[in-house]
Length: 177
Image (cartoon, rainbow, N blue to C red; front, side):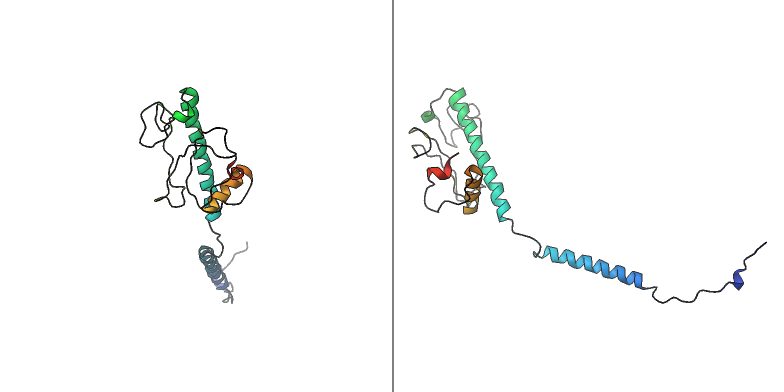
């Protein structure tokens, strides 16, 4: 029978390079931390303005759809003439009121998508607009928006990626839907 005597076994001598593993591990951790810091510094990030413009444009188009649904309820279901619809935030109790539960059934649109939400508000002018509608009773909903949002609305509505010049009302080809 073969026996193994621990006392006669040769001892392993100290090996050089045994500390290289922990050193490489620490270097790898430092490289990961440096990459994370560089990514957070903005060198790898882009601006959020284009995405914000797209989000606001989508929300504003949806607000327009909601206003149309409210007008359809008052005019078609309620039998009210377009010129008789009351579009006023304070009027919310009659069947002719757009923002009434018994009228249009919609809530007043938010100002948060405006260029300056604290000072820009929705306006609801009535009247003829060349190239938009056919009569003197056109109902409009307008709010001032940033040029980037305006360009994105134009892009989504009719494929034109230009904004309207500030101070000039949009022409019929810029607001056509």
